[in-house]
Amino acid sequence: MDLGIAGRRALVCASSKGLGRGCAEALAAEGVEVVLNARAPEALAETAASIRATYGVSVQEIAADITTEEGRASVLAAAGTVDILVTNAGGPPPGNWRDWQRADFIAALDANALTPIALMTALVPGMCERGWGRVINITSVSVKSPIAILGLSNTARTALTGYVAGVARDVASQGVIINNLLPGLHATDRTISLDGMEADINNETVDAVRKRRMQSIPASRYGTAAEFGATCAFLCSEHTGFMIGQNILLDGGSFVSTL
Ligand code: NAP
Image (cartoon, rainbow, N blue to C red; front, side, top):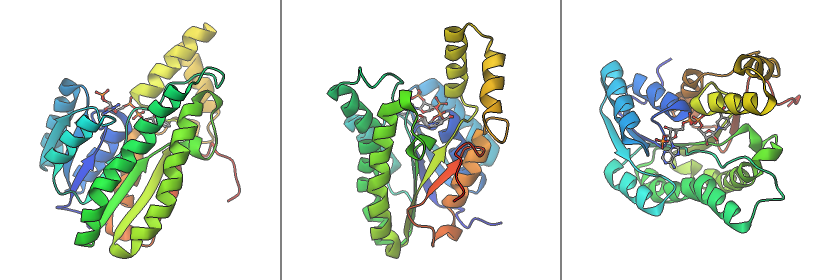
């Protein structure tokens, strides 16, 4: 299927590794120019070089913390006009609800709700004027199925989901399509490090932890960044003009519901 987006320009935030990189690669494979972002410049430069060499598209990289005002300003200035925005950033730390203070919630909301909102505020008006745009927000399965130790994430991502539900419907008639992509467990650095932490806590091997976690997923495995990216690219395609403000779950069947 031709996704019809060759030659478009995409800003993919937090994309030197993991799910963000998966999205950038899948868009580049469709002939989309990509602007990559992450904090650590070395890994970012390596990813940019690899995508450039593999897909032959224009790739620009901007090292900055997307969750800060200065970081966003430098990314937006360098990115210029973009047709496709993929918002992403690291998730809030796990913990216990008894310990979370106002400052913890402010930090989580800043990173995982107000950052994507600021990026949409900056870029969606231009998309509306040009009559075409796609926005994908990488959120989490925790929006549908709360994870107790990730209460900061549950809170911030649900706030973003509520915002998107309204804005997506407001701009749909102007050719701008906004949807959220909700990852369950995927084999990224983050998941690998969580496997290691759980193994240490329970005095188990990493393999034992991984096997148990995979068995809890109906698909019996973790998702891959490539699968995640392919879904993202489809959501950014010409074919999704009637898909408005949806929350698309990619979790191997872990969230159990009939509808
Ligand atoms: P990952 O493998 O750790 O990759 C994170 C990427 O984001 C890296 O490129 C990292 O580079 C960049 N990044 C992190 N914080 C950033 C910031 N403040 N500014 C700019 N770039 C930043 O993580 P992932 O597994 O892909 O997860 C991506 C998002 O999905 C996270 O919010 C995570 O909580 C959520 N999620 C993931 C899963 C999963 O199973 N993987 C499940 C549910 C939700 P630098 O460190 O160099 O900045």
